[in-house]
Length: 235
Image 1 (cartoon, rainbow, N blue to C red):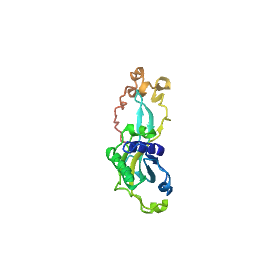
Image 2 (image 1 turned 135 degrees about the vertical axis):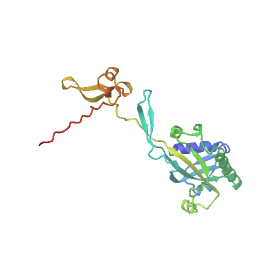
Image 3 (image 1 turned 30 degrees about the vertical axis):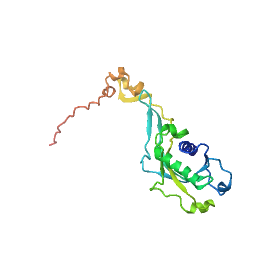
Image 4 (image 1 turned 45 degrees about the vertical axis):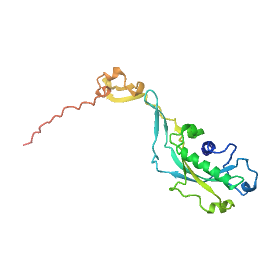
C-alpha cells in the first residue's frame, strides 16, 4: 500500500503546486542541487519513519459481512493504522521558488486534513478507515538534524508531513459451512434417535417443530415431577 500512499500524496499536492512540478520519492542527494531540474522545480517526499498509530484502539476487532439470509459470508480482521513521516524538500532555481513550493504543500494539507474517497488511490480507496494529513504533528518526533548528515546534505528548509493511513485488512472467506443436520438427542419409538436436517437460516423444519419433542418447538424440555418416597424404619 506504500505505492498507493505515494500516488495519493502526489495527487493531493499537485492541485496546489504549479504545473510541471516533479515529484521525487527517493532520498534527496547533493545531485538534486546541482543537477538539471524541471522548469517548475521538484518536490522531494522522503519517507524517513513509520510508526504504528494505536490511538484508535481497533486492534483485535473483527468485522463480518452477512448475506441476504443473515449468514456470515466473510470476515475481516482489524485495520491497523500507521503514521508515515515524510521529509518534504523543495528544489528550484532560487530560494523564493522553493518557499513557494513548500507553501503549496502547506495549503494542500490545510485544505484537506482528511482525504475523501476520490483522493485515494488503489487499496486505500477500499479501506474502512480514513487517511489524514498533518504538518509537524507534535505527538510525533520530527526529522532529526542528523538526517542531513546521513543524506550527505547541508541543512535546508523543509517540512515534516505526517500521513496517517490504514493498512487494508484481508477478507477471510474460508469459513466453515453451516451445519446441515442436528441431532436432537431424543429417543423415539423402538430406541430410534430423532434428528433433523436444518432448513434455510439454520431453522428446524415445521413438521418436526410440531412434533412431540418440546426442544424442536423451541420450548425447554419439561422436567418430570418430583416425587418424595417416605422410608420405613426397621424395628
